[in-house]
Image (tube, rainbow, N blue to C red; front, side):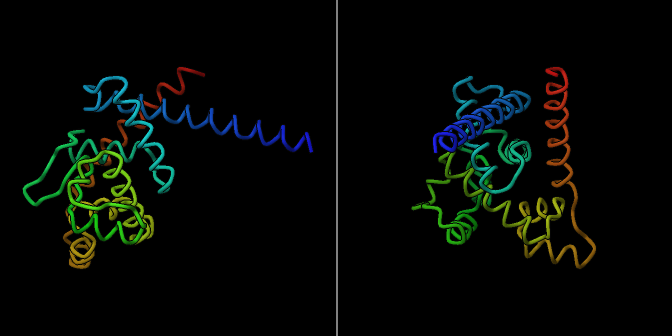
Length: 187
């Protein structure tokens, strides 16, 4: 009995250490983006939210950072001419749709400017799109940008735009390289 309790404690501590390491890696990646202008406290809070939501929605935190970089350059009050809001530039209708699918508690459109709500819904939406495109990241990114129906129509017509996907993928690769360089240097 005592051995089981001790094993559980060790497991929980290792899990907490791994989580802290992941947050620090995410924080480092944020320093390589437009988020570097945030205070270290704000960046660490953002890293924690991104890490938690990315893990919850089976995404790489670096992909989430790349998406935010391209969508809003980390401006929590960003709003597009089409009405997309917040860090991950979600349209209110899209947010309501994904909210219903995932049981997130978003009460009004102004919540889309709330960092945690926006990232929770944005990562849930990205996970949904990856599932809808059978894990094809290029298609999921195109769908994130233009909507899934438009993406599938453009794909059928052989006219799928690649500029947005390429921009996010380029940012994602840059972040991966930066994190890999630090990881290798620490070994």
